[in-house]
Structure formats: C-alpha cells, structure tokens
Image 1 (cartoon, rainbow, N blue to C red):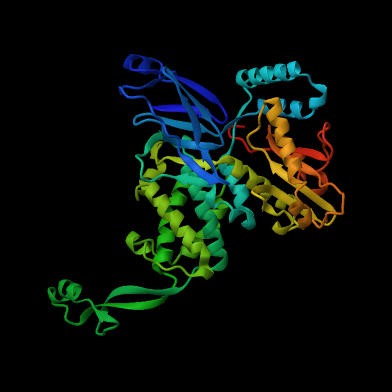
Image 2: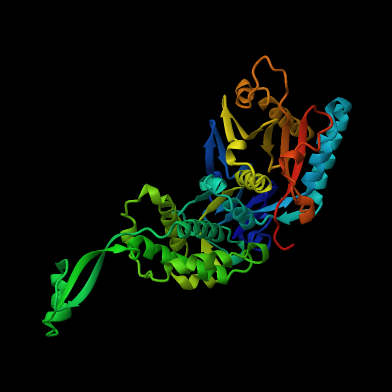
Length: 482
C-alpha cells in the first residue's frame, strides 16, 4: 500500500491502530499496530562534506507523522507493509514566487512585508495546480548525448537489491527505463569502437580429428554410448568476437529491445530511441545470445575497453530487474527494488549538456564542472577569454523570502574566493568582479524561446535588479503528458 508524494511537498499522515480507517482512508492514515514507539529511518542517499542527504525527511509525533519529500525521486519502504513513492512532479508555482522574490530587494521590504510574502507564497504553492511531471528519461537522454557529461552520471542512481521488491504499475517505473537508456548508450559507444576480440572456449563434437582437450565425460555420453567412435567431444580456444562478454551483452540487448518496443510511455516522440537500437543491432548479428551469467562475474576487464565493465554491471542489474525472464518486459504490473534518483545532480548535468550543445565551439574544460575550493563546490566556473562566470544551478527552488536571498548571497560569496579568482586569471591586485549566474527550472517554453538560451553571450542578459552583477536564467525541463 503506497504513499504517493510529489517533489518538495510536505504531507501529514495520522497514526492509527484502526484497520478500518486505513482501508477507508489509506491516504490519510498510517497504520501502526506495535506497542512500541514508531520509528522510521529514511535512507541516506549520499554524504558530502560531512552532511548526510536523506532521500526524504520525516518527523514523528504521538498521533501523526510529517513526511517531506526533498531532493530525490524514487520508491522505498516506509514501514514493513507500506512504501513511499516520490514522483518527479514539480510545482512550477514556486518559479513564480522565486522570480518575484529575487526581483524584490530586502532593503525595500519591511519585516511585515517579508512575512506577508512568505504566507502568500506558501498558500499559492500549496493551492495552485501548476504541477508538471518531469520527464526524467528525456533529461537522461540529453545528458548521455554528450560523452563528457555522461561520464559524470554514475552517481545519479541508488538501488537496494537486498530489500523486498515493491509492486507498482509499469508507467510508475523510472528504474528500468533509466537503466535501459544508460545501457544502450554504452553499447552505442562499444559499437562505435567495435566489439572486443578475445580468446574464448568452444566445445564441439569433431569428426575424425581432435583439437584442444577431450571432454571425457561428454565423449562417453555423446559418442561412446552411441557407437560414434569416429567423433570426439573437444574443448579448445578461439580468438574472435563471440566471447562470453559479447554474448552476455547481446542477451541484455534483446531484453532492452523488447522493453523499448513495448513501452511507449517513456520512449515516444522526442524520446524515441529506435535509432539507437538500429545502430547497435548489426554488431551482434554473428554473436550468440546464449550466455552463462555465472561466467560473467569472474571476467577480467581490459582498461582499453572501459565501457565493457560498466555495461556488464548495468546489464546484470537489468537482468536481475526482470528476474532473467524476457516476458516480464511487457507486464503492466511489475515489482521493483527500492531506488532513488538524485534530481539536483541530474539538473546540473542536464544544464551541463545544454551548455555544451549551445556552445559547440567550446569544450568541457571551459566550464570547470564542480570546481572545488575550501570545502565549497561550484556547479560551474566558466572561463572563456573575457567571459568569467560563477554558475549555481537551483533545482529545488524555495519560496521563503530570506532563504532565497541567502542562496543568492552564497553564489556571490563563491565569486570572492581567491582560488576562484586565480583560476580565471585574476590576481589579488585586480579588483574586477566575477559575475554570478543562477540557473533554475521553469515551466516549459516553446522551442524557439529556448534556442541558444545558454549561449555564452546570452547568459548575462537578465540581471537580478537588487544585486550587482548577479544574473538569472530559467531553463525549461522536458515534461510528460504535454
């Protein structure tokens, strides 16, 4: 029985021991039958700079529990029999209040006005229906379109294979399409290089000759007992492409192909990846799909073919995801292990890919992704000739007036760090100020409005009026069901 939340939403559940209340109003009540105090331990997604990032937050009182979805989307067990599912649905009403707050300088606002703003903003966000379901798979496809960005995507996903699986509908499943897209992207890179050749063992019943070693047991069963005395069952090594790794990759590729063909919810229109499937298919034409899963576990990987290691790792997750049964790729009702996706990180990488796409003449070195100094980590430190910009991406927008302006001051503080100034070629005697830029999500615009939005010369067009050399850019996110 699930508890469904949207991103950045606070939800309150009453605690009860009454089974009838739970059946009649399951969205309002959380059943708790134990005599001991209810305890819930939210999963820790990551730990950075001494801070734990929980997948969701909760506060437990005598008769209620307050759940707060935060930076992550996914699904997990809340108690032994109820799970929590945080959907990738953003309330774009927050964008309106965010933009209003950053255009209103604190020096012009009294404490009463600030308090009134906070109350009205909270009411607006909680009552308006400006909800859009973010197309996570479309974001991922944009990310993997740039190899420099794709290699930063390893830590986007957390999966717990040890916990019991959770029943959901196919269109609620973000894990499978996420893994499938990453796997196909790696296969595309492998296809571009060509399949790795290696020595592998072949067993064959040879006639009138012997090669390699004789498999005595099989020789007796297949030939001696059947009076085939001129035949010999042998095992020998061959150098070629039909190796254990390639057979395993083809097996997983067939699963992915079946899944993509039967799942139009995520793979349609702009998300159509049939071209990627068609690009990969020819390389497996002469490769067998019969693979021993156990053999793959003990393979040694060649560093020159680095894509193989990650592709085999993700391939194992995909097969485990379908319980090694290809018919489950078409099921409407499925079960999934608990998983979480780091959405702020995904938004960072989405912006990164957009920056590279809009500025094809530049490389990743011009953007200094995750430039770190003194315990601080800048999302981007752009350094291109006369264009030096400190960039901070804000996926989780706030509507509290003071918190919004604290975020702006934080970005401005990054630009004052000596190490940042030295990185862009400014010494201590140079009083030039580095412009700051905040990039945030906003409701989707037309493609014409977005064209060239993140060109370097366009980044500093909209200044946040109460601040000096602090700018903003709203980036549209791909949405489902539009």
